[in-house]
Length: 519
Image (cartoon, rainbow, N blue to C red; front, side, top):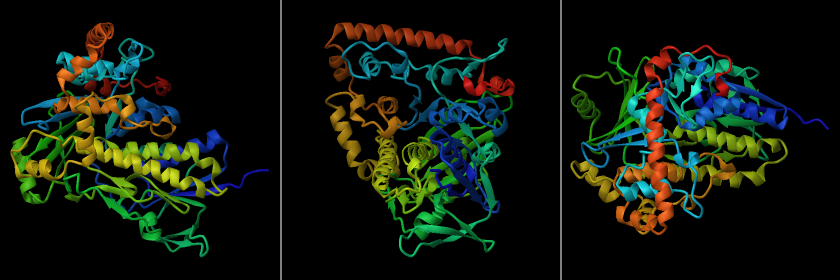
């Protein structure tokens, strides 16, 4: 018996909308499901677009979709990202790197040890936990992830997925060009018709006056939350009590002529928040994320100009209302992207959250579309809510600072550190973090776990060296193996980074290949 083709409308385009459409299309192919996919977006809705960072999940998705990575880099003004450089968070003048690779995946683990034995050794030895990371050395030397010169097939420098920086408007347009077999309607959705008995959406009301029949809806309308909130009544749960910034002032900066392109996001703490710098190939996307409890927009602009030493031209001043929906899935609608949750852009949670959320839906719930999905909603909503709550906890950890030099930082210390962060730090004062402190995310999908926590905890000075010495010293063989492995990885990765081409030179000479997505 053949299945009835389900009509899914993705409301809102951009990066979140087109990623959602492509993930659903790929899921339908894998499950052999007949789907009729349409993205409804209005060309009259402007995009701000001053730089966006991803996690490695984005590159993994490119590979899964069979998209050409080098074409992506060439056509979207994108750059490589290996992690985040944090300046002035622990104290003014201090910085630390947060690389996103995990050397434990490339090292031979000794038997019967915790998953974080390399981190444990580095803390005990008084070395940054970032030392045995390949991405640390690629960040520091501004090198590319591939060796291309004189090679017919580019050679990856290491085994880890890197991430990207880009202008989200250009990426949304590129993804749209790649979305063959997905229909597109240029219109604004202004409401919906609903089944009087079930409450499900039967058709979307378009601003042109037409109705668009649907069986299922993905709401990617961003802050409007047109379907999930305005139509279906989802409630917003604010994180303002623990995430203290509530405004963002984005702006562009030009690259210095012939300057190297940094392959990392810069997050530089300021007097009342922090500033991001995200390099694209043509310019630097920047912004000041701050609290208007302590600064006016004019004062925020003045502080940034004083920091940079020259004037800026703000593109906007955006209100931030960090939080998430109480339910991402209501009736026959799932909300994704900024329609589902919104955070300050400190750890590239937005696009990552969209990818993981839609992969979760595609892999485990899409096959039952049209067969009654009520039994799935609670589990899905719990997983997506947990994802956002874990993002909040991880971002909040960054604010555990020694700084007390401004009213903002004193306020953060006294009022904004979450109870869960305090509980975790109390636990980790008695033993170092372990993999089993972090419950796996459903489906084994990428999530915030100890490999991302360690560089932040170490960089903020929140891990006890004497405790680490005691733990690693319980087994001299494990300690010796960890020392030998850490030294070998650091040596090998420093050497590998030295052989890679510069980041800018690599991007300016990207090879034209049809198979770069397979690297």
